[in-house]
Length: 220
Image 1: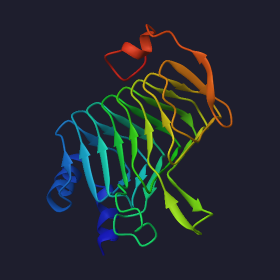
Image 2 (image 1 turned 30 degrees about the vertical axis):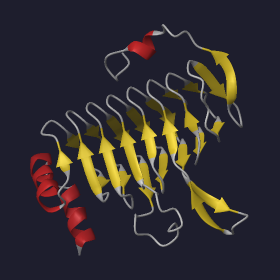
Image 3 (image 1 turned 180 degrees about the vertical axis):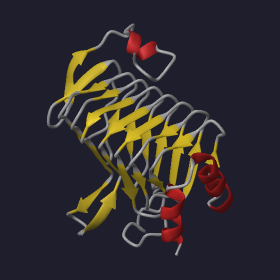
Image 4 (image 1 turned 120 degrees about the vertical axis):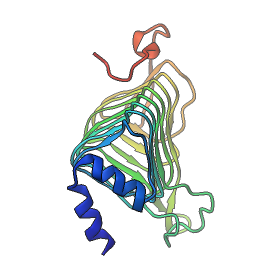
């Protein structure tokens, strides 16, 4: 019954939809935030001032979705996970199935984001292009069971099109992940281009580059 109600809510005009989501789902949505024609029903939702979720996105089966002020989740993204009380990951007692999108950060179009464990996307970062996958869960061959690890994408990063980011990986602040790369571990050096399969540091970046110091998320 609740799923049918959720489908009906998706089609409501935004002012009425916002009221329903606040009143019955207890979501924290700023007055200036907005959701388009999307099915956004995590366990809890927080949207800061002028946060925006566009059309045809799906966000389900995760404990929490946090969208910082002026953040954007554009179109046709699939955001899912495994609920906090799910059966397969009880050995991960600190697991946090959440997507946290920093202020002025942007997720573009047609990406798959698996939040079985926590994914942090830093402020002013762009998940660019199309068809990238951020996957926090997999199979532990030694223990013969499913397992998961969080992912962290730092602040002021640029993530290229068609990348794969695996559980346990981290991209440091003010870095670029090249198109088509596979990020499979936690890197630590900022102002670098990481690229390849698996991704390694291939180039140093200018710390004074304008992208790393902009005051708005949108790149003109």
